[in-house]
Image (tube, rainbow, N blue to C red):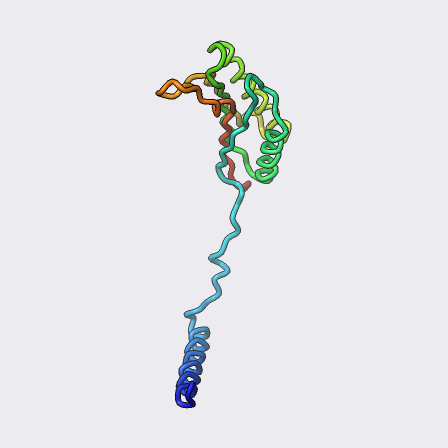
Amino acid sequence: MSSISTLRFMAVAGAAALVLTGCEGSGLFRDRSDLVSTPTTCTTKRFDIYFGEGQAQLTDPAWRAIRMTADQLRDCDIRKVQIVGLASATGSSAANQGLSERRAVAVTEALEAEGWPLPAFEIAVEGDTGAVTADGTAEPLRRRTEVIVDAAPRR
């Protein structure tokens, strides 16, 4: 850089520094910490608990998912917990309905054991309803229980 360019650069940088220093005192750049809030984990959460074919026992990954969610929401007000038991299309409709119910009960009992309030639970079962797609394919991902938790910060 030539000496004239260097002088111009220094002059522009110095002027910018003066302007920015003046802005700080003028209120243009104010403390914004009052605008920043800590994110809360106490919000609506949805998670699925998967089961083996024809099974209603909670697997190790299912227990981990339940404990992790319970830990995340430990300091929250649990307003409502919707649990929907589902089953795949294998087996009879009556057997799948019963299996869906046992799955929903297993998840409910696990969440209750983690300290969640039982009156907040709404349990539904769908059995194998909807377990076959329009093209006749059985849907294996139906071997689960859906959980939707309405949580809010405690007041």
